Image (cartoon, rainbow over all chains, first blue to last red; front, side, top):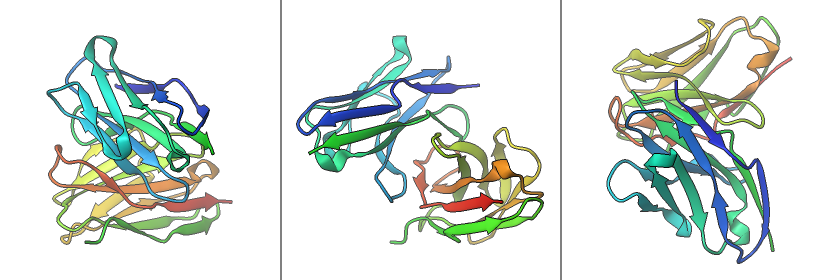
Length: 112
Length: 113
């Protein structure tokens, strides 16, 4: 069975700092990869996805992620965060069927 | 264009009771998946419904069951509630049995006392 590991449970940073959130998964076959975000009081929203092709994918709100197959990683990055990026971020993997396997999430607090 | 809607938003039950949660998928979607999100954790897959049948199931006991209606809406039923069933229950809808991007509702917060 696949599993997803997010290395940081909590991240605190100041506005304009760069953000990188780690995500590793365990599954030997073809996967689809996702990052979802949950802003305070809101539902889970898709930030970006990787299905195939260019391993560097761009999402909404200036986020990007890089799929490194050899490292089973799909790290999320943003060069300069804003206070409005305060949220919980979830990495997810889809292998067979429709089942999404999520990591435990990373709470990001951006201080103004 | 309505997104995924879930009802009720909050629910309080006691141990041993039964509960039914409801989900209406995003317009145009035909697949519904249910997830359980315990406090401080990521969502865990319960099961998926497509064409009114359960197509895939996660590691949840038979106390968790569901149904999908011809209009693609879905229900999640949990019998013999345990304290550990307290969680946020999320519904996600997508198009097609396996390939679609899943869009999530706001969830139903279930508290079991």
